[in-house]
Image (cartoon, rainbow, N blue to C red; front, top):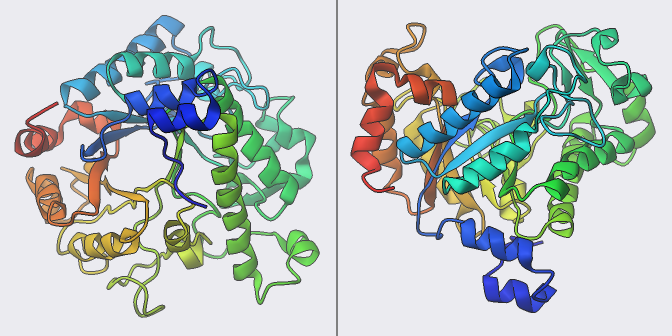
Length: 403
């Protein structure tokens, strides 16, 4: 399949003037292709960025969210990536899943307002794109199904669950799970004029030493045609990605589909097509996510590899990964944005380069030498506001002289 991009005239021609409204509106909002993407993630899992605590009043929650949008404008960003399904729950009135506990402190309790609807409306009023960020398979950051709300789909279908690393996950190897999580996410696409569906790096979970992700029964039932379990798992992830890519434009025209993977696909020592890195995690092997395939086949509209390392970091050098990813997108219709580790700036546990307020600015300077790089995204909103050691101010002054 090819990238789902529509011009205003093309949308009307394809769908008719009355049916082209969504595509036309999205096209009018979207940045020109020669305008860099300047985004920030707003994480809601464990109340990381927003809301600052569960149980705040609707008025306080709304004010905090609006403040982040205003900060994005002040920092001359043009997009926010808002986490709206952190743990098989919802930050909108979903037809499939309960309200998130990160709003009220009680999963399933109505917070008295619509965070996603408000975010879409207020972002667009400010000229910001709103990318809705979903986590497909994480059910809970704990391992106790009885703590889920009584009507939670995972309690109705306990056979869908896998406990791993002290957390609960839906089993990606079950077709009914893949179908359900797609429908749960598409509910938001149907209800709101979001600019994109966004997934992060969590497909199969990151490896936990000494633990096994128990999908034996599903592999026995569905994995017979594959050389090994890893190949079957990658196919499960492929099916989810391609299924979502095909479904989104059927639900709402003009909505993009982007994925932000871990920054290393494979090391060169593992695969000659891989990057000159020695990372301990490889997204193809450990998370069973063949991101390179998705890009080469134009299954997604944009990719945001999380290049969360400094220039010169030997196991995964930013300066080696940028050209690798630029080469991956070359010849495709997939836009490349780079995920930036703002959260590491001034962290005393990080290497010396992260104590330098100019490290992130140097990232943008270096990346500007690659025409395939079309923007950057900062993790995360809390640090954009805090501006540790002036790193955000430095980026804006050095690179974002215009809105």
